[in-house]
Image (cartoon, rainbow, N blue to C red; front, side):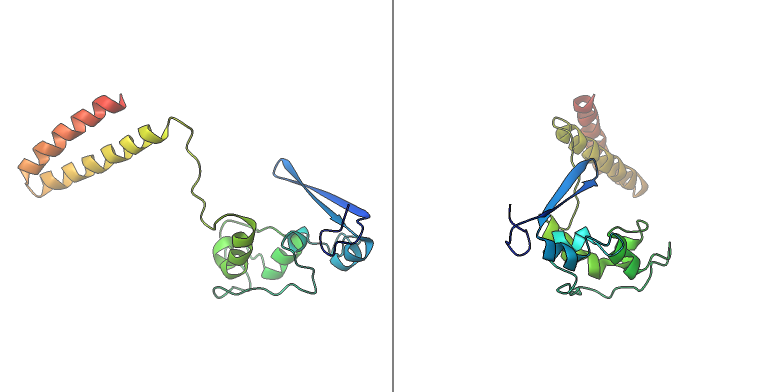
Length: 163
């Protein structure tokens, strides 16, 4: 096997458990020493997976980065050492640091979640129904009874489909 950083013969094989799965990296002895793999306190797998050795790492600034999270006190230096954030507010505080890495690691920077197959249509109908009910309340408040009648009838039809 070859080193994933310099293509020399890999002699160090590192595996890290990540969210129920595993991340594996193969390094030559020289790259393992440079990345701090032999010193667990200095090793950052995030840097290696991002194709950066500690000497090459240069943060790409997208927005101003806070020195510390106001919510939990976690610092940017803590993030760089540990490779994970202290709380959900850290994402906002360190956005300029995190955004370039997310763009490299994932297919995009926006999480849209997943809807189980077969549920997407039902979810869309429920959202439309909620919007129509809100519009009905507005139409009644504005005394626009013609629109209210149309919305009421549309709501009845959608409720029959959802049930």
